[in-house]
Image (cartoon, rainbow, N blue to C red):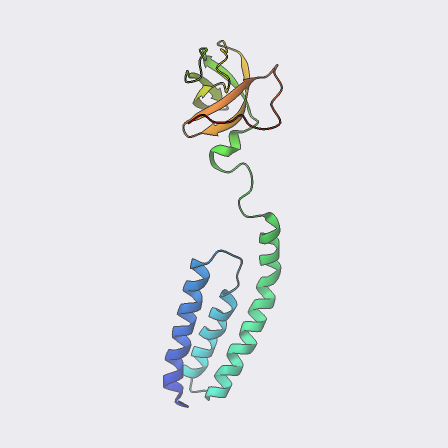
Length: 163
């Protein structure tokens, strides 16, 4: 067990497991410092260092890497994961121009332009909206957006979806 050749494989395996664990787990750099420490310990074992020295290298490098990555992890955690406005959700609250009438009826759709994008649109209560009107996007439902005319205030809670 005191053979450095044996320990270089143990440390390489540990670095691999910690690295894969970091990639597979949500969170901010918890296992990465240990992967770095194990990689350095493997290098020390490869260079012929005693087992105690490779353990010391693992502990010191892991501690330094943890301290170095902690501020970055804290900033990422404070950002709150996915920011609002990612993907189609970025459209919520945007003003749009109605290109084709949105007919009256709950399942009726028209066409609107948001920036340079065109989207199928409907109103939550089935009211009609005429061409060249301004609307505000309240919700994204798949490939459609739910809109309200700009002269009408947005509700405080989104309307219930009917299945």
